[in-house]
Image 1 (cartoon, rainbow, N blue to C red):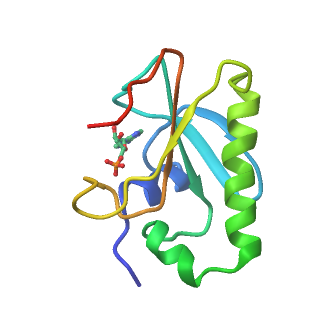
Image 2 (image 1 turned 120 degrees about the vertical axis):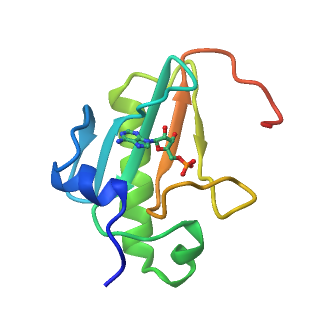
Length: 115
Ligand code: AMP
């Protein structure tokens, strides 16, 4: 079995987090080092290491995860002003936790392109 990541421990409650949304498929919580006024991470309850793993996942699992991302943003009231969803994937993107997570960033005008 793969080694436990920080986000496995967040999901189990071993590491405390501030929940902002959850359902059967996802758990969403505030990022500990926010890069925008709103910075939330959304993780699937079943672990994938990164977006790359979704190539082999069922459309149902992918759909439930992405729906959870959109529902998190809806619950946070972000639909009107807008928000950004980021999936850092692999070394060049500086993914630091090997547990699939969507960053939801919002609350200010976000620059483009990202660094
Ligand atoms: P990434 O660099 O895309 O892998 O993003 C990992 C994110 O996890 C970073 O934005 C960190 O600030 C965040 N993070 C790390 N540990 C925790 C934690 N215990 N609770 C909440 N966010 C965390």
